[in-house]
Image (cartoon, rainbow, N blue to C red; front, side, top):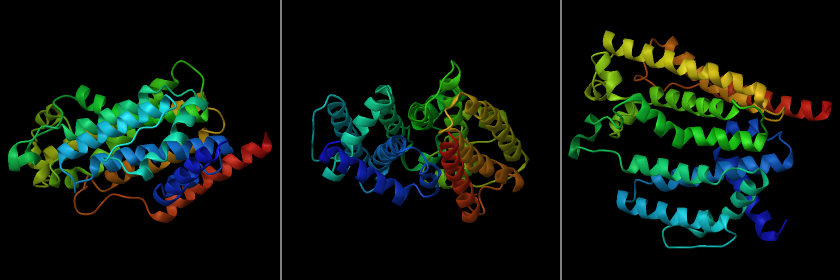
Length: 309
């Protein structure tokens, strides 16, 4: 490994250790090459999010910065370098590790550009002047499903390439896993997203239960809202059921990480139900001690399996 590549991986690992919190500990027990790959993947996703979500910049500037980042990623995959004013040298410095991870684990390159496309979908969302919160971003569940693929499903697909997988159903179950997690995030953050002008639930679902984007903005928790939430929770459970079957297709290295993520995100969905769908009064979350225990259990299982092998 060259000095530049080693420095890039070190930067990725520091970023993952600092920002990934409990998920970092869930994959720390992986073999060294897979651990570095997960850190590189996390760092890449983090940079994409940071560029797209930087509200100190205009939407136009963030769109230009994403294009610059995309050009730099494309150059890195070709073994070249690319720089521009819109992306800092610190962010560009992770790309040798990202490119190495893609090559080492045969990850399709288009997944990484699909993530950038997902960031653009957020920036290109419809608005209505000052009343942006009154506009649903998706008319149908098919549209929401497409968005979830770009911001979450591709992450699952990249992960299973790093962990190792087999079977014709694994990739679809990885997409379903990302969809389950993203649906959970959407339900948990309904109020905060509405305050920020983001309504992700499809308008067809809201209309089906007599709700509207304004219902979410006003934080009304009437019978119609509870019916809507029950419907969305049950939908998410179907995707969790598919995701749980993914474990059988994974290498032993990846199984504990998947189980940890399912327990954390599935725990959030259970908590939403336990609160009778009250996602407004306080943020739905799991106690830190519980997440730490789940992550520690994943780490232990990985290390135990490696020693047993």
